[in-house]
Length: 213
Image 1: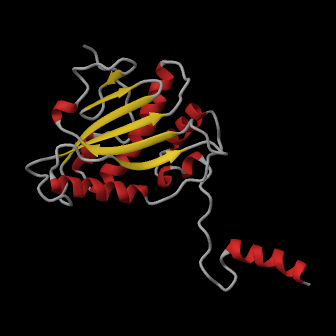
Image 2: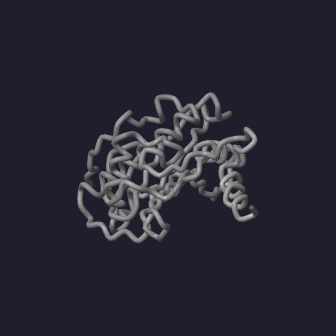
Image 3: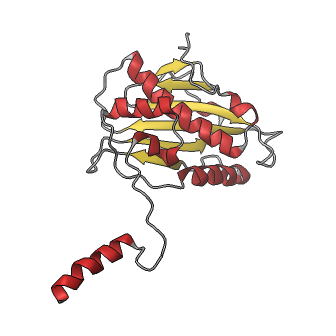
């Protein structure tokens, strides 16, 4: 009798709904479900491309609100080196070090990369500026929002950074544009959550214009 009860009890505990309680959140295992489900279809396909999979490690939720809240709080503090806030970390089933991580923080103008031209990164005319390579991408934007007090006189300067850990992808145009498409979609979601006027100058879809010079 006890042997028969134990399996049922285990199922009940795992389900957490045995008395009409809340149902567990569904596992977020597709590209479209990553990053709070905010990635555009184009960005979701790009994520599948760079990670070479259509199945992902279950992702948590709430990252968008944490980022928006964190950036707003950091703006009010006006610190020189504010922290980064992670939006999401999309990994392969079974774990492993080959995931894509997206973080946001506030930046100062002297932290822009346009004059430095870091090795392995290529500049693009997107937002204030953007850079992409085989293992990372950056997108900088400026935001004026009625939801962020003081931004009408001192705009909110947002840096989005995508990191592709242990990437072995070639440094090609399709790879760079895929990383930038993912980061653009995530950044657009953040600036919209903040209520930035004109979507902080970002187009609704990424436009890949290499920046010369």
